[in-house]
Length: 84
Picture (cartoon, rainbow, N blue to C red):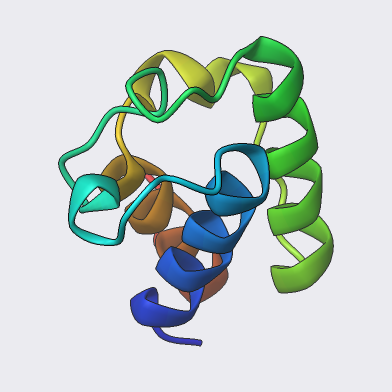
């Protein structure tokens, strides 16, 4: 699994919520909040990532996941077995 695949899944999810979101505005540095991912949407996104990549994203990790890049990094690290 590559970080690009995770980023694409996140971007597709955000575009389903808000079709006007462009790829540059959903760069790794964009916060999930800026992209309109509210708490309910975040739960849905996390479930999708967990199912797609067979990882677990515990609630304790959420304070460290604010941006698209944080989320991509977390999922790829969990999949590689090097989670922080």
